[in-house]
Image (cartoon, rainbow, N blue to C red; front, side, top):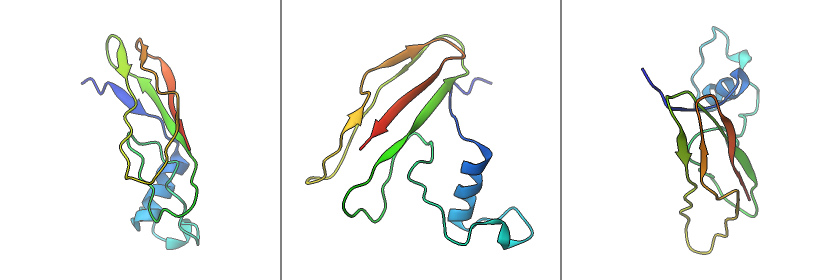
Length: 107
């Protein structure tokens, strides 16, 4: 099995994701925060900003190459007209197995 790239997330991020979606692996609902956590910085290969109003800053996408050989990653931005997006680090990233790399820091 060769998963290739993995998007690094800790237990807290997974827990917040499950709480946000309403799924609860615990026997008591009190394990989730009373206010649903934001998913803006959830480390996934795509970024979605719900209920967009004003300005939003998103920082994420740290990946680790767990596959054989080297990896190559590129940043692609698609957005609606009248929305300004800036991405810090648009360059292609390459590296060998075990490389951990931060890909995107976007405003």
